[in-house]
Length: 204
Ligand code: 5RP
Image 1 (tube, protein in one colour):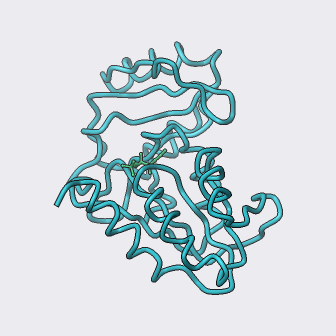
Image 2: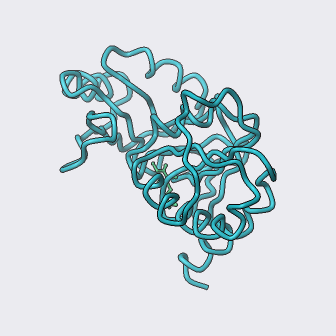
């Protein structure tokens, strides 16, 4: 089976986690695109969706699925999204699609995070995939220098990418993230960091 066929399979399988009559949280990415296409088949049985990106919103709407503003939703039972890496405890690296901040906001609304990923995403230790960080442009150079001095890691600004929030993505290579929860808390506190792509507090 190709990787895209596997993504289509998990996108379809995710339907069993959607709670009928409720609002579903929808992530971003090629795996989620398959989920959105499958969700169209049950659109009359859900109250709508909260989306984590402009791209997912457009795809949901193209299927006639109602998209609600996150500000108008207090809680949702489930958030369904992909990952760039996931470890055996459900900690993830996310943000390959530059949507990590909105993804974490919607994940935070949800009682449960269901990660849909093919087996290539499963790792023992996070960090082989470059860790994405959304940063305010003014802070990008400072954040990159800090990764070099604190972690000996190489960080670069993702070329040509501006997030849905008008910020930049810094990708960090050469990390071995043995304590994802601690690193998530630490990096989130650096000035100018909007969101780090470690999902440990919101793990699957
Ligand atoms: C987007 C994400 C995606 O979930 C992640 O990049 C996985 O994408 P794909 O399903 O295309 O492999 O975090 O910001």
